[in-house]
Length: 390
Image 1 (cartoon, rainbow, N blue to C red):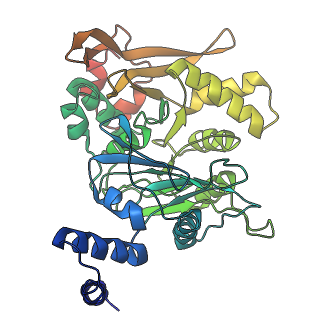
Image 2: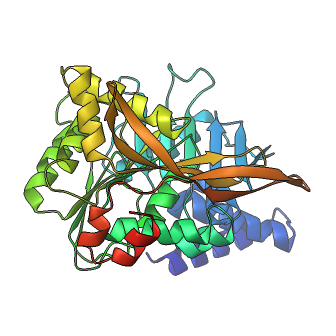
């Protein structure tokens, strides 16, 4: 039955029922929508998913719903009828992407049809009941022009990043939770030439790269109920090397797959992109060292040399106290000195004040000039190289 036919059936049923249970027109319309969404949508969550002002939905049990609008959290008065109804909805979501979540495997990452990211935790791990967090992404990914308009970065910094992406610099995006790393990675991907072949690797597919027609998207797989069949990030990175990619994009590195990513960047896959959690660009280097050590039993000096050779640029994003998301640092990895990976800021965010609750500041150019300028020259961007003082 089509959605239109099913909605008509619900309307006829509701109107017939209302002969004995009078309702207002608004109440009838709400009942029709709720019934339709309970079968063909996400039940109570569907109106929230359709609201473009909501960026995150948090369910702390069937009676506690919170949403984020413009960076501010608020609790909703509505609730699911029962814990069982919420559990049914969770099973519907994970089954749609061929994932399993139950008491023996109570934590899972999934995605919705529209690309939204879903994280689920079930009892007995979640003490209040089934917990679900949905990170929504806009239907049309933000472009670099949109980020400039929102003052996330300056136009000059965007021009430099465009040249770096086109020149196949390996760029790593760091930041805290909710700082906009995935959004920024999507925006950077618009600068990738359309004639290249890209392989993306993610835990739960959420990247929206529409500018490259030759695109392969890979997603990890959890183990089945027997504990078999899991496909990890490490396996996908190794498999991607046999797919003849020009660039590899790793959605986020969290563990031992970091060493495989670094080795891929060091074996001819220039222009690769990835993201990771950290408090600053310098902290990101330390985290890369830790993650690499968890994946390979190598001396720390070797790991640091791998990081220095593989990553050219680190872009750090932060969520400021006014809840705006800004690029706060663009740094170049310049090498290893004294046994430590050295980075030099090219741009740094400088706060100049506050107006009506909004942080005022700008991304300022430092005195550092690009040392790895040969990639710019090889890409035919000698003008940019000269401007950067190389």
